[in-house]
Length: 550
Image 1 (cartoon, rainbow, N blue to C red):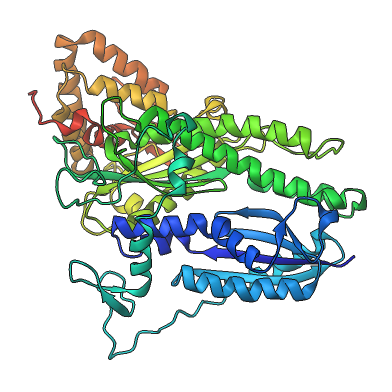
Image 2 (image 1 turned 135 degrees about the vertical axis):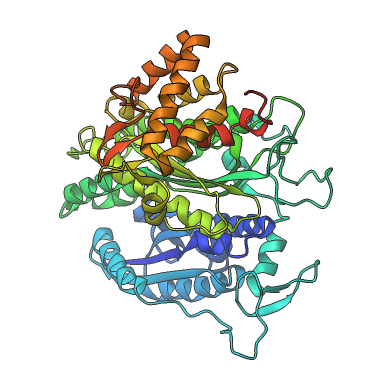
């Protein structure tokens, strides 16, 4: 039997969501994407008279099966080529109408088996990825453009600002019911009235959809981008095992769809645990201090109030590791029963990038930096593998300038200083490990940095001294050492026990001789956690209060 596979992949989803920088339009765009391969695709299938089935033997003129269907991506199998072509014709028209401005690619392929058809389809997608999409209408020299995006203007918003065509649809979609709400909230809280904000600058302080900033703080938020590690290990192991195995051909759909659903369920459960433990207010506030943007597959993108961002990220990464362990165990028992697939890990981990920025700064640039931080975290974690699996962890950075550089430039120009003797030192330890796998490695662990921050937040210490030390690291290593020695002498007289606890935590983070130096020996040379502590103190809830100690 010839198999017919139709593959669709939405591209540059984050760019589509963050295009204008207005939170309401980001909310609408995220809802459009979230519904795209769910309710929107259901409507297209219904129009064609197709019903979804998970039984390959049921594939006929009235049924379609999926091996993957989530997050703007799907792989569909149909019984005959003409029906596959009709699905493609209708679906591409639907996407252009419900999500104009979204980049996407698709392919239609055949094969003797499901596996052959999919491999041929992905080969076509790989070719399409190098071909830029054409967006209509194209901007001409005599056409008015929307100032926020540079795209052709299609009308004005309620404030009189010109906006492009997609912006209007996004703004309308922002007011619709959100499926993301239930993806992030634990089921027991669905009927408790909790909502996510859709405005960073509400029209009045009483606007229930306004972002709940702390009254005493600056309007700081964090953009969190998390991505799973180890999916390639599983997919490669499956491909090597299933290739040429005619006896499992009919189980192909159950194996791959089961894996996709298991990872999606684990990611949602992890997000719900982080939301329930960190974001849900313990007072009467119903508007949660975060705005989800993407939750699909093993990806998470969310805007979180700055003082809660790292705690949310930690809980999510820990929960992701635990939830994938449970989900994969069930998947192996059900879908892989009787199959020996060498090299399968018992769980997955995830890494994240967290960027702190002001609510008025360009989110598209900040997200690009968060994505780069996540990639850098994965690379650094790759040096600490346990078996074939990277440990989970995150890397964070605070934007303190009006212009947002790329991560390599920030690392070289802002976070790397000369030691005055021909060497370089970094003002960050980089990625901090989270979860059980990370605890088995020499990667600096988040709990130790959090403990160090707690020491420096003590009422017995001045945060100004830490900021001064961090500043002197940029200016003069000699003056920094003198100031550090003086600081230790003063703290030793007034809080000797606290100083001993600080020294012990610094040693845990790799600083061999905290009595004389704040630097540990890292993979890229000497590095210190002090710059990370200063960022935490500035972004924490306590750090929002005025300085009240000498």
